[in-house]
Image (cartoon, rainbow, N blue to C red):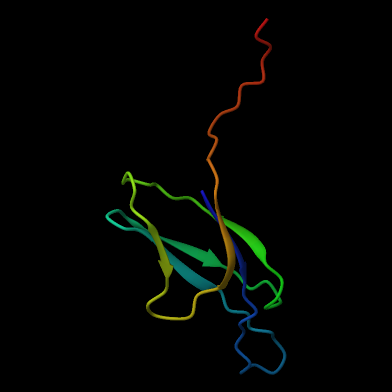
Amino acid sequence: MLVVHYANADRNTGHAYNTDVISRFLDITETGGATTRGVFRHNYAWDTFWPQATPLTLTTANGPLVLGNATAYGPDVDRLELARLVLKVDNRSRS
C-alpha cells in the first residue's frame, strides 16, 4: 500500500450554485514494473493534507517509484508512506 498525503481543492467554477469539485489522478509507476492509477478526491483546502492508500503490486527488486500525471495536474503531494497490506489476522489464543 502506498499512502499518499495530498491536498486537492480543485473545482470547476463554471456552475452558479454547485461547487463542482474535481478529483485528481496520480499515476504510480514502478520502473521496470506496472503502473497503478490512484484517485484523489477533493479535500476542500490546498493546505490540509489527507492520507489516501493506493494498493500496489511491486514486481522488481529495486525499481524506484515514479509519480506523475502526463495528461493533467495531479494532487499536491506532501509525503509518502509504504505500508504493508495485511490480509488476515489470527487473534486466537496460542496456549
